[in-house]
Length: 526
Image (cartoon, rainbow, N blue to C red):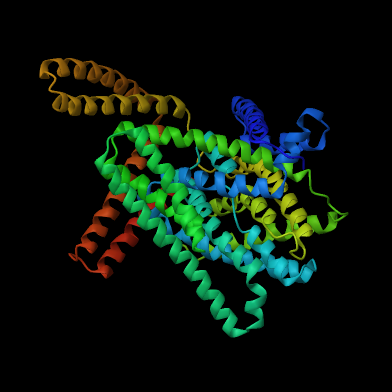
């Protein structure tokens, strides 16, 4: 490639952002999953000859550039943004299916794909298990955007997102072990198996430790400042710092970022962030994630067209079939022993386990002298393309066919009204806080509070009218309220256990009762 100075790199990067933003805007206008639109348009741009775009295409599709942009530049931001907003209480409530999928399911998929491609496709043992690791990572961006558009049960969305965040960390660890240590472990026999298991545990544990320590430290730091621009900078340092520090000591950077962001977004937000800070941090990372995802999926589309297929269509289709079968076995087996987990959810989790940019970036990071690298790139790119386009475009149809929690009539109007209620209540709370802090007279603050109370009362009357006209809507909101109350009961029992007021045995029994009620509530939505 010809020499490129920083000015040219900046111009090409800006041009890439403009293309990605334009495609994303059009996709959102027509209420379609923008990652899929970006991949398709990127592939079309890559296949067609646009002289003005050739320097951009040549620059982006270099393996080193692609890997740096995806893994170092955007991955910490995407993981941090998603983890920052995950409600810890709901994550903890759904920890069994999430951990079963993220650890048991990922490991099972890795083994099935690895052994199948070794015996059926003739890949070397190392290449086969590297491919197994690449196919174990899932990218939920497209699926979650579809969930939001049609109102899928929130618990299902939490399970899908939670699995993706943790299985990314698992997949990266398995990839590194398979690519660089597998042969030496195999040569050592049982001793090698022990060393591999120890390395696996050590990498994950160190990632948890680094993420936990930095997440807690930065959360405490927010208590000393009420300055949202500075606290946004803290979050940037936290996400990238935890990732780079973990990677520098050969720990899992992915797991470190996920844990750090979860602690910062839950514990840190509770003890040290004002409503203004929470809002602005959330808005900042919303923009960052949208920008990152838009560029990433456009780059995936461009990159797919640069890889020759070497007349391996039979192998490509066989690999797609193996990955689909492995995902199905992994999902249904890992969730088989979880009581009352809705069967229709398993189908959606299975088909919605899309592959994405992380798989491609990891494949491109393989050394050029890695045996079977070109074949792995071909298989990975086409499985990802099939996953995003075929599975991504059909998952909405599957959700509707299965009837998973469709929005009831008048739900949109209710959402608008309930949003107004929350706005007014937050404003009233803030007025009371500001009045004490700034010594504003009570009569003046009461006058403004009354205006908000009147607005709130008017909206509440409209909600009551909706309840009368749409009884199903009222029933759904009653179940939502009950679910939140059950979460509170669950946490209250946990606090009693931590304070040694009750035994773990009693706590486990009460937790199990609450979980049964929660599962039954979700079953009634199906």
